[in-house]
Amino acid sequence: MAGGWSRDGAVQDQIDASVEDAVQQARSNLPKGESLTHCEECEKKIPEARREAIPGVRLCVQCQEEIDNENKAAGLFNRRGSKDSQLR
Image 1 (cartoon, rainbow, N blue to C red):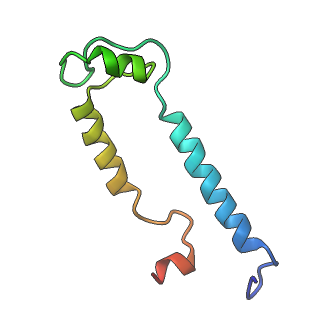
Image 2: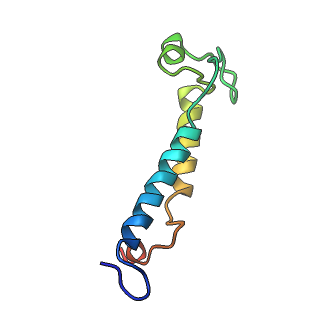
């Protein structure tokens, strides 16, 4: 149930939009094209098993983990400013 000046279903619309944004972001981060044999960041050899498992891979596991951790830390706030999520 929405309150104030918002219409019924507005909260669900906001949740749906947040989920759709997250799905779009995840899809845009998927690697594309041919896998590299060496990491773009550190130049270490990327194992054959990783290149076969993830088509288009460009980073070794260690460099990918560092980037994932940086992105995780940056995504810990609610961009849409949901009052409900700020109270938790």
